[in-house]
Every structure is written in structure tokens, then in C-alpha cells.
Length: 505
Ligand SMILES: NC(=O)c1ccc[n+]([C@@H]2O[C@H](COP(=O)([O-])OP(=O)(O)OC[C@H]3O[C@@H](n4cnc5c(N)ncnc54)[C@H](OP(=O)(O)O)[C@@H]3O)[C@@H](O)[C@H]2O)c1
Image (cartoon, rainbow, N blue to C red; front, side):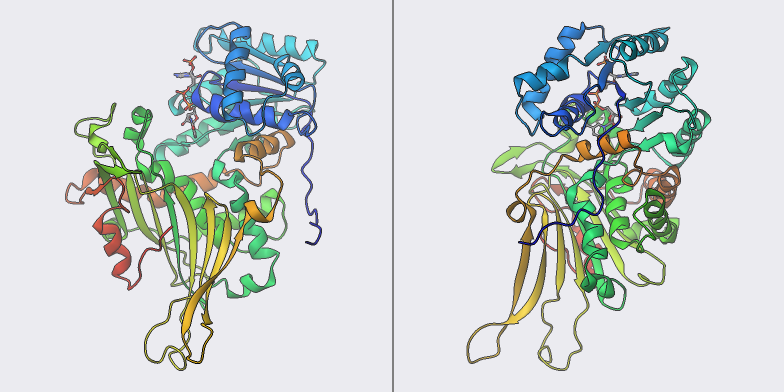
């Protein structure tokens, strides 16, 4: 195999303090602490050795107990096993403070931060990761500011704030959140996370498109018939009903992950790999998405919720029977929609997007289906299978290209064959978790894989007519699909009406 060419080398993070607001929560335990440990893990050293991690939440627990909880979480979720000497070093720089919701809580945070910086001889480079409920975000930023914890963007040392999804609940709240953020922070200090962008396959989309000469020439409406994106989850709502029942699939998956995937796939080549250039290319796509007139919502978007059914030979209950879901809930657990990008490259090419819970298995993939050849030679007597490029995002990350080939023999028999690349079998190194990559980018100040405020606003603006119609028009059906199936009939009709069908993921 040829040597890899290092185009952009990951930088080592500068010394800083990472304050996790919401350090006692699920995200901190499952993703943030394990990712920080992995970045730090001995021998790899992407984290500056003197980095301090300060957990901040409402509950009062001793630092020792926080360390014990962090160790348990890391042993459970980290991709690297705990190494005693590395852990001791990491734990020595892991601190905790309670009272996030108490008067004076943020002033105490400032004092603790300054003490830690003095003790560890750290410059006041600070990252505040908001791993707290969405309704607490604005107040947290206001409190950070009034405690004097936000330095101007042009200061010698940086202050950065990481915002988790959901970034707003609708267009109005997203605009309000942006306004609050901009009151206290410069856009360059804000890192809005969509962890899908930290996944290797999603980043590889740029390499696939712009480092290979064959794809980009065909990447347009002359050669592509349509694109499908499926993000399937087999899990139900689990313990997240309090959040999910207020959100639903359109807000939870479509507004962020699905639109991000669509944008990465369809953007124009950026003028450089700079964050600003990449973000501008993505903004151009979202600006070109065809607006959805209210009267067309019914014909381009389908909503549904799961009923009881069987997954992995286990019987599972329906959404309305799940703990914490309102009896009269009108929340969708599945959405399918059709979108058009009205620009020169994509004019007339439909993008079909679907995502849902309690589908047969967990899988995310993008299918780029190419146009048929003219009906002159091999397909004179009937349609042949189209060429399809599949980008698998999870599991078994990689891509495959399905083309037609002649079956050996005297007859001319044509059969689809697959050229397949699986990252796992092709590359030996471990891929960093999406949160590792994104945390490192926050520390090094690289915005490429983060969302701009304008992108967030435009994505809500696009979907707001669907949210409004679903809320206001009781005639728009809430279909039901059995758990373990591929969604409702309406999703089949949506694509079948165009003479196409969903591909298996
Ligand atoms: N979990 C995930 O996989 C995931 C994925 C993507 C995005 N997110 C987002 O990440 C954020 C945190 O999610 P999570 O699952 O970790 O939530 P969680 O398990 O409920 O934890 C929430 C954390 O925030 C604190 N908290 C709760 N209510 C608060 C309030 N009103 N004001 C200030 N702090 C409060 C809690 O502190 P105490 O425990 O001390 O009360 C806890 O540390 C949410 O915005 C969520 O949407 C989570």
C-alpha cells in the first residue's frame, strides 16, 4: 500500500482549562470525559500535559467522588483501556465544583478556575462546554459573562464556548439563542457542535469528492438521478422521553445531522480548506434549498410514530406506551422528506431523506444513484439496475460502488457487482471518536466542523413550515409503523410517486 500524504496535520492543543457545565450528566460521562482521556492517553498526547478539566454542575459532590465517577465512566465508554499512570496524571488535573444553579455559583467558578490556573501555571485559556439542558444555555452564558469569565475575542488568551444540540427548538428560539450568544460572545468564540461532522466517514466525503478526479465530474444533475439519505435507529426513546417528546424526529435528527450530511455531499468545492471557506460553501447550499410552501408540506414530508413490534426477536412497546411520553402525544418518531437544491449543479435532482426510531437496525448511509444509460444497447429489452455509490456512515464505515458487469459465460448476462471499501479492513489505526476530534478542534480553534449561527438559522427557516403545518393542521396524518419495520406507507408513497424506491441500508 502507498504511504498516506499528510495534507493537514492535527495540532497539539494549547494549554487550557476545559470547564464542563453539566459534568454530572449523561453526555459528560459517555462522551466528553472518555474523549478527553483518550486525547490525553499516554503516548498519544494530543492534549497539552497541563490541561485542567473542571466539572461544574448543580449537585454538590466531592472532587474525589467526581474522579471516581469519571473513572467508572471512562472504563466503560473509552475506546482506550485505562492505564494506571496515565489515569493518575489525568485524575490529578480533574476537579469538580457544585452549585451551578446557586446565587454566586459562577463567581465561585471564577475563583476555582483562577486557583487551578495558578496551581498548574496555566494561562487563562478557557473552554466552557455547555453540556446542560437547552433551556439553561442562555442563562449560563449570561452568568459566565456577569462573573467576568468571558474575555473579548481579541484578548491574548482565548475564551471559547461550546454549544450542544438542540440549538433552538424552532426558528424563533434559534434566532433568540443566536442573539443571546452574540450579546456576550464573538462568533469566533462560539463552537456549535453537530457530532456527525466529527465522524470519519463524513470528513472523508470531502476527500472522496475533492481528492479524486473521477467523482467530481459526475457530481451533478447531468449524471445523478437522485440522492437518498437514511439514518436508522433501532432504539426507541429509552430514557430520553422528557426531551424527545418535546422534540421529535424532525428537530432531533433532520434539522441537524441529516441536513449536515446533505450539505457536505452537495456543497461546491471550497476555495481552500480554511474553516471560513468550507462554511461558506455549506451556507451556499442551505441558501439554495427550495423553500417549502405550507400547502406542499403534505406532499413532501411524512411523519409517523412507532407502534409495538419485534426487534431482534424481542417484542418492544409502542411510542405511546413508553415511560414519560404524554398520553396524547403528537410527536413523530419517523420523518421522511424530499428536498431540492435549486442551484446550477443540483437543479432537478431530488434528495430523499428519512430517519426514524425503532427501525430494524442501526445504520446510516447515503446513496447516490446515477442516471440510466440510453435505452439502446443492453437495456433495450428492459431497465437495468442503476449504478449506485453508497457512503456508509455507520456501522462498518466505508463506501461501495455498485456497477454492472458481464457474468462469465457464452451468454451476455448482466449482473450488479460491488466494489467495496471498508475502513476497518483497509486501515489499521483506530479512528478517534467524533467527540475527540471535535474537542481537539475547539482547543486548537478550528471551526471547520462546527456550525455557524447563520447555518443554524437557515436550517430552522427551511423546516419551520413543516413544524407549523404539523402543529396547526390536524388533517395531516400521523402515520403509525410497527417497531422493527422500515417506516410508514406514506414514506414508500413519497418516493414511489416519483418512480423510485428506498434502498436497503
Ligand atoms: N446525552 C447525549 O448523548 C447528548 C447528545 C447530544 C446532545 N446532548 C445535549 O447535551 C446536553 C446535556 O445532555 P445530557 O444527556 O448530559 O443531560 P443530563 O444527563 O440530563 O445532564 C444534564 C446536566 O446538566 C445539569 N443540569 C440539569 N438541569 C439544569 C439546569 N436547569 N441548569 C443548569 N444545569 C442543569 C445537570 O446537573 P445536576 O446533575 O447536578 O443536576 C447535569 O449535569 C443537552 O443539551 C443535550 O440535548 C446530549
